[in-house]
Each structure stands twice: as structure tokens, then as C-alpha cells.
Image 1 (cartoon, one colour):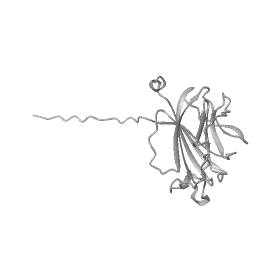
Image 2: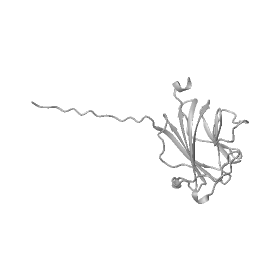
Image 3: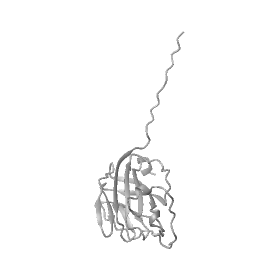
Image 4: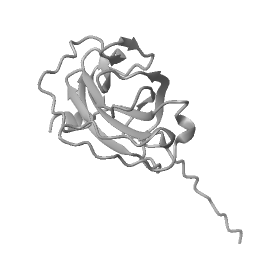
Length: 183
């Protein structure tokens, strides 16, 4: 009797995949820079300055320490929630934001908007994960948050991504699932 063995092949389909990315360097002004939807007015007069991220429909700004002159930024668009990073970060925050037009730009108060070629799949509700680290060679850095001026954590890692900058930021963006929008 011949025994046939059938081996089932399992295909691992990644739950999330990187759709697009873009890297650049910005010079924050007035201790902030942001990612904005170019179709909306990004003025937000009632921002809570005790949080790292300042957000309103069509915009998310990151507060940065006064010592940051140049920030290296990597923007990533993902199909769904990106995998968690195993890197150590000085800080990380997630925020949900409406992107009604879907065309993005990096914005500084003094420099205006710099369009980025990263285009979300469609206008709508998105989550953004902002993670950042400071250049240990340029420290110490102090908190820009309202009511706090303490020195910030500067864990090792990601130094190769600094490219001469004072801060490295990784911004990951993904569309919020339709089921999440109705909750």
C-alpha cells in the first residue's frame, strides 16, 4: 500500500503592507511642523499645547524642542495598521484625522507648504502614528510642551537616519476601517 502525503502550503499574507513612502528634511518654525491636507485651512486656534501632537480636521502638527533646527522626516502610507516598531523612541503618539482632499504637504509657519508625493488611497478618516527620536550628539533637548521644560529621553538607535538633523520622525498613515468610522 502506498501512502501519499499531501503537504499543505500555507501562504502568509501580510495583514498590512507599505503602499508608499517619502523622506525629506524640514526646518520647524515656532517649535512646530506639520502634515496637512492642502484642501483645508489649517489654522487651529484652540490646540492643546500639553500634547506633542496638535490636530484638527486636515492637519497634524508635532511640537518640537526649541533646540531642533532640522528634522529628518519619513512619511509612510500603509494599507492597514502598520506593524509595531521594535526601535526605541524618545516619543510616540497616535492621532485620528480627517483628510478631506487627500493631497498632503509638510508645513511650517515660516516656510509654508511643501507638497509631498505621498498620496493616501482616498479622502477620509485616517490614523497617524508619529514616532520621534533626538540626535544624541546635539542634546540635551528640552520639552516644548506647555508647563514642562524638563530634559527629554534620548535612547540609542536610529542615528543613521538623522542625516545631520537634530530629530528624526517616522510618520505612518493608514485609512481607518469603515467599521471603525461608524462607532
